[in-house]
Image (cartoon, rainbow, N blue to C red):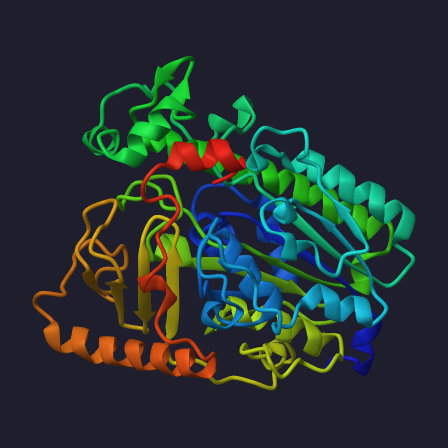
Length: 449
């Protein structure tokens, strides 16, 4: 059992942006992307089935810090015009009020102002970059070192946000060869890439970063190798960071949660090398929690982004805000809980598409709220996750009974949430996904995607 003095521990939250769970060895990946995390996770609680309740970046992180679903905190899209519900709780604010010294090494506040709330120190290493996602793990880690050198003896909360697995994938050249066979040609034509380059999304990206030596990359496995090399590069800097924590005696005084906001599609779905679509690649995320004095273990039960904030507060012996809709995972961590707390996941996306999904152990239903789909996908998709874990065969037409059953569950949940939040209609019905028309225009205007 854990000591009751949890409130005396520091808190470090580490976000590994755009990192899909199944590209880590911790989660079964066979390639050597994460040797440090693989080893360190043996000392941690690894949540094997941690899922995003809303994607991509802005709704996801807002969900993490409020412990609320998107229909409650109101941020349902990435890059949209919505502002956060002023009545939503905010984890950094709560910790600030409990006398934690608060710091973020991050740049989300350059996207939306509410991400600045609750921080006495806000360090943005990307202010000199053309695009927010260009910041590298070395820059982020060194800023964290500098701050910790001054303040590690105080009770603190530190949020560190790494962007490396996010596009554009620009890892050190020497790491790419670890994941791409020597002698293979990245310019060899591949039917999947040729089809991708015909789409509006593919046409835009072919002009920007999908190039090597000035030539268009045509092998999707090479792009995946870039992604894996970025993870390996990040893993190396995480090792340096944790070595620093051990050297300073910080590690044994700190609760640490490592997570991602969403995953990344490679080339098995049409959202090539991006994070739109409610497929497993995008919504299944890593969650690894280190608690001093607690032995490492693996938890198989379904948990969600909304659970991070209440879990952190519970571990720190701080009363969980009643407005939070997530559940504390402390019982799983300390061993007093061995039953599932959720039967299903409900999640949504509004970036390229306006879609809802409901996922059970056996099936996933994806339901569109708009007639237009940037990829021309059908408005209803149903997948048998047991027999088709890669979600390659849409069986909605042949399993209308299951479609109707899951659709009723999903719509009832949405209706309940609308009533709870005094909303007249589902906001996904009236919100235009910001990237559905002109990706390049958005990126050049705002400096992120």
